[in-house]
Length: 199
Length: 289
Image 1 (spheres, rainbow over the protein chains, first blue to last red):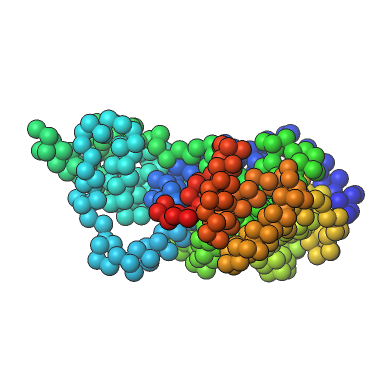
Image 2 (image 1 turned 30 degrees about the vertical axis):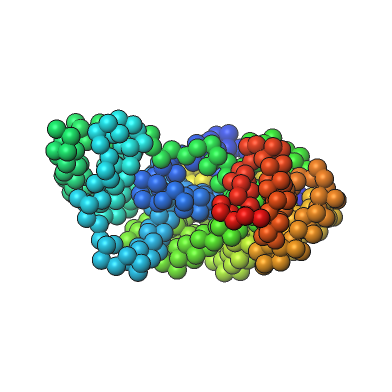
């Protein structure tokens, strides 16, 4: 605006580039990936009340670093890396608060967490299923949860997960195996309780 | 390799749609981003805000909304700083994923092709300025935010990269950001040409002053300011916010009959307002006038 020559040259280069290699603008990315960012953070354990802050912060980072996105990974894995960083920062803070406030109860006991009192009939509803899955996910530790969410809920491939989380492929597999075992065991306990209760 | 039973998978399938954001989630965050990052994000595109006036309305209105929500939204700043203070330690490719603006500045040759001259010397000055603004959006959205934006943009987009286009596989950074590209580095430092105060800015000033008074415990002054706004801008862009805050001010003054009447008016006038929850119980559930 102040130096029109440079500005217009700048624009010309950019416009040309945009045509040859379409790249999402920030606004496009916001529209197309807002859902992904939101549900990923929720599934990683961010409570609804904090979601505005988290989503906002993720997109601020996206805005400031989109220029450095190199296309080596997919937009989704890149985005998830950002979500993860923001979520981890929240988790550290929340964890500290929870430990401070709740003392010994802070360590998750899958059996206890899973027992939401939801009967099989209520489970028919998606909301109830979501709540149960939430509590099952809460019982996983953060590392396993990240991998599990990407694999089982987002159905991302293992190599993509490795990139998104920033861990070796083998670690993805081992974490996923453990996460599945824990998830399945906790879910089985939940079902056993339900059946025992209702039959 | 999956140990999940069909039941587990069914459960996950059932839960997969949960946690999707609503349209209102999407809109709320968009407005907040607009305030924080300015109009350069292109996010206003959804409201067809090609004219300056339209943009100003959106921005100004959002400023007020944020001021209103200010008391609630305090967590963001803390997290923001937490993220800055302690980036996740185990990120092998942190620079590419750059969890925070601070990290984004770390020039890593392999991952960040762009930074050449400007990036290395500019970071601390260009980076601190916009960030300190971020948590306290400036009252003058257009000029201040534009300066803010250009600083931000140029941190990510050194001019050198623009004039000599990078290889095909590296991004043209400012692509994402057409409205912000015109300003060149000097804009960040040069005093932004002051815009003449608009009625919108006057409106914003009144409402923000009123909200500040309200938060500061001076509900009487807040009420006076909101009433002044009502007189000066009966159908202003911030009429909805003013009406809602006025209810709160009346409640804070224990003028409960008036507060309830004003709340009823508000809900009639703005049945779908995001602020309606705030005005429903101006004097609490149990208190009597």
